[in-house]
Length: 578
Image (tube, rainbow, N blue to C red):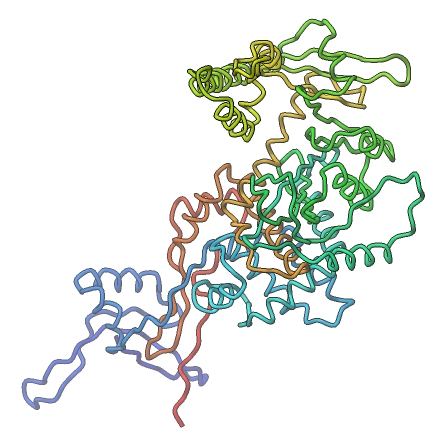
């Protein structure tokens, strides 16, 4: 290919492109250019046709030869990093207003807003894509993933960003909620609340001095409560032993984590409490914190762990209402009366049957809804049958045992409450199945009892609203599974709380992605991680180019309403040699 120039009368220069090759003159022997094809003026040439010609010629070359063909240049692959997952998370991070909320919170503090925001995004992205410690996040960001405009940082910068997140958490959470609720059109009139816990494999709990300091800081922020005012717990990640562990590790110190979720499964806030804090106290802190957001009338949906007369009254403040589950086997007086009341069941969605019951008269009347799920009933019957069969096998032949051996067996079985409740001892200390307890337990098969203060909801609405508590359970599974909440590599109280808030932000991002695509984050992550950013070095400069999008990647981006990333993300000319 050669370029010829011609100067017009007006002084303008016009270039022409020609395809030519050299031939020796038959007489003089000098090389002479022979034109094979004229492409016309250089400024009007059909460049797409030139690309097709180059592609056609490249078909007859080896791949390496095709890349290095231009003037014999050499191509070196300098770097290859995962790009697709981080790109999608970054787009959602900005769309949900998280970046803006961090910038707004940093405005009144002496921090570099851009750096802090990028470092926090890197920590959250790592939690979504490749969960590990904060120290591992430093090398992960530097070597394994392509993050837009993210500066290199060390572990101290990561800890400083976490400290900022915790210090400005209230303002940040409010900003994120305002933007997310408007953007996703969330149903914020129904809030689901639940708690879980996470433990540390250490032998001792945290010093009570840490909890005392947290309590004092809480008192400094609030006006003193009156004597009749219900106790509101301190939000602090103090590791303590507790008889009630959601992980069934009462031998290890833990912290309690609470989460509030919308009907769509979007987590709007997380809290952390000392390990021995009861659920009945946790709900009051959640009610107070969300009440500061000036939401409209709320319907609180909780399980039986939050149920008490004080809590029910607390949830009704400001015109709110509640749906709480009642314990069946250790039922309150009102709950026992509701279960004993006759009534006709009505079939609602699927095979679920419900009936409405009112206990009491006048203003003190309590509204209950009894629901029966045939599938759960069959499952309860199967579980009980297995327990009874196992118990029968264990006590078989025990009449001939010495009393000490029977006592040892009873002590062992009491470690499993599900077995112990079906066992009784005769007057002469022999072991028998408690058929009365078995029949009483069968009365509760497949049932759950709901108490509510809202008279406007139908029994069907009540049952379906309570069933949606699975959204919170789903959140706990993702926190402890895909996002690997545990093991926690922190021991300071403030860093533990910051770590849990990073997990909350990660859960928010992946839940939005899952809801929009209808697929699990595991599948989305695996597909998006196939997109890499490749950095190449040639004689003409250095270029960063992403791999081509697959059909599934295009579907994911379309569902999330995210544009495809640019093909070329960076280009640097070679450094001139002096």
